[in-house]
Image 1: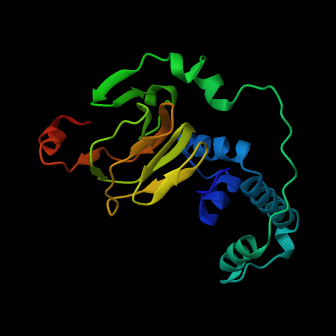
Image 2: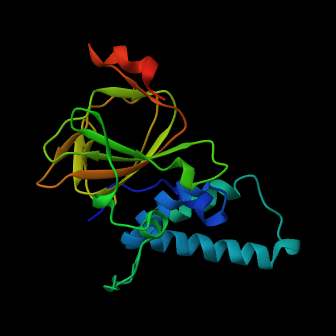
Amino acid sequence: MTRHHPDSLSLMEYSAGNLSEPHALCIRLHLDECPQCRSRVDTLDSLGAVMMEHQPKVSVSETMFDDILSKIDSTPAEPAPTLPVSRMSPLEKLLGEDINKLPWKRQLGDVSVLDITDRFPGQREQVVLQKLSAGGKAPAHTHRGEETTIVLQGAFADQKGVFNQWDFVVLNEQDEHKPVAVGCEDCITLSVLSAPVKLTGTFTRMLNPFIR
């Protein structure tokens, strides 16, 4: 069960088609497994369709944006049950194979990475798959920009809590953490970074000049 979700503004941007392809992929993967957020996006899509249909007749007030956000947050979601369907996820279509069989590259300690930025031509952000070995710890770090992450497999924990499969989190330069993979399987995440991370450990911080 997902406990960490995209915020209302991100869902609005997704519904409006304003997100970059990597960010939209992260939200799409979350929506595929989260009936609650899927219901909220359906509401946004319906509102957008009505606004477009009556666009010449509608004058948009200064408070309309805040009113829509408030409506989405206060309206209880009544999601339809998810039926098991055998289908290929957008990520599987993009990668062409199982994430556990990818050519992972060991980065630091228990962390392996695979940069897939080249799968998104023209994007300025870095798009990275990260694998933290079961029970392993990632180096303590903060962020030079914004990092959007979705958990694809397993789970990790930090000072903000436990993030399970399909959980969604956005971190920035105000967040410093040291993720630990919990459970019996490797934790695999998909992250979109506007800038490289910044290592903060006593020894690992010396590697910052080499991080791109």
